[in-house]
Length: 86
Image 1 (cartoon, one colour):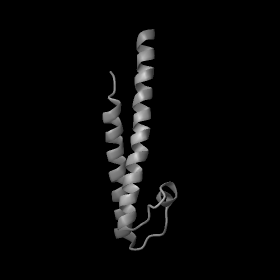
Image 2 (cartoon, one colour):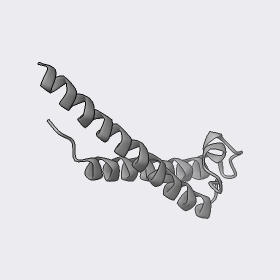
Image 3 (tube, one colour):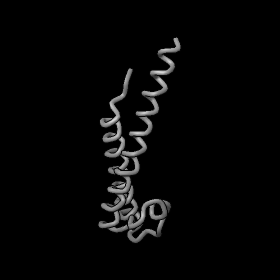
């Protein structure tokens, strides 16, 4: 089975981008004024503010989109290699 690289990258980016966005909002609502956490170190500009949540969502989308594309490409490469060997 071959993975569609573009679709996998888009799906990965959307899931992680929304995840970062909602995680930031959850921390804002839960703690009021939360202290910086690991997300702030990973994505520049991502702070525990409404604007920071949008910046983090964009960074997360780009980060997971690239990672998803690499994963799907590598999967297709290895699946083709091992399929031909069998």
